[in-house]
Structure formats: C-alpha cells, structure tokens
Image (tube, rainbow, N blue to C red):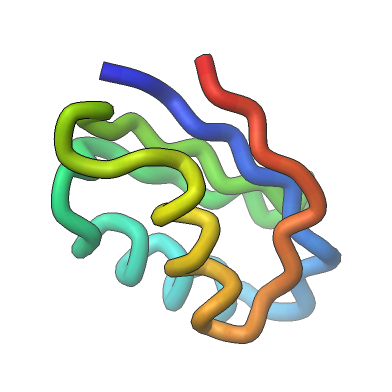
Length: 73
C-alpha cells in the first residue's frame, strides 16, 4: 500500500471536491481518498501493485484540474 498526496491548483467550489473524490475513488486499486478543499490537496491510499501515482494524477488532470506536484509515501 502507498499514499499519494497531490497538490492541486486552487479549487473553486465544493462540487469540484466531490467530483475529484468520486473519480479517484472509482479508479482500480484506490482504497481511500480525501480531498482537502481549503488546502487544495488530494490524499489517496492505493495498492501499488494495481496502480501508481501517475495514473491517479491522470485521473485528476483528465477532469480538467491542474496537479502542481505529487508526493508518494
């Protein structure tokens, strides 16, 4: 198991948060996801044998949001 922390560009509305959470949560291998609206961060726990942080980043950018950085723990 691994954790990705993605720093996003500014989120402008709570519906953006919900949209991102649902999309990342539905990606194979993701076990938990939380979007921190005020900090513009996405924290996702995932099975690193199924997916990786780059794929999770692509999910978020595919929705039209900027991912400024990604850290994996």
